[in-house]
Length: 128
Image (cartoon, rainbow, N blue to C red; front, side, top):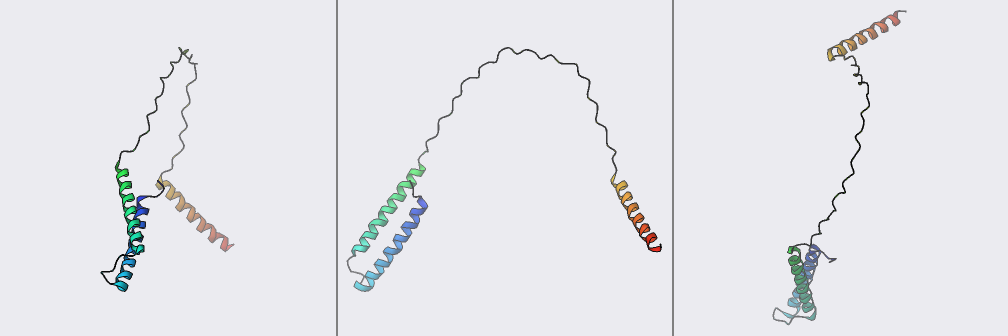
């Protein structure tokens, strides 16, 4: 199905607008009791066909969808008896060395010292 239900809705709407214009032009020219024109009959027929198609598509969308069959996989082949691995005598791993940790307060103090040293260095260079 290449046309979706929503696109049929738009086509029905457009056909209804065309039909309405054709009916108004007939009423204005021939009066309310005038016979329907061939154009009106064609538009009515087209609109009816579109509505039927939309109804059948809606009914079809409510039907259960076909599901794919489940994949049946064969049983795994058992592996042969495995030879036990001989564990080699390895030396135990050395523990990682702990890096020296500087606390937040120590970092702030070090930064303040660096700022003061920079100020003093600037003053000394200005004197000389």
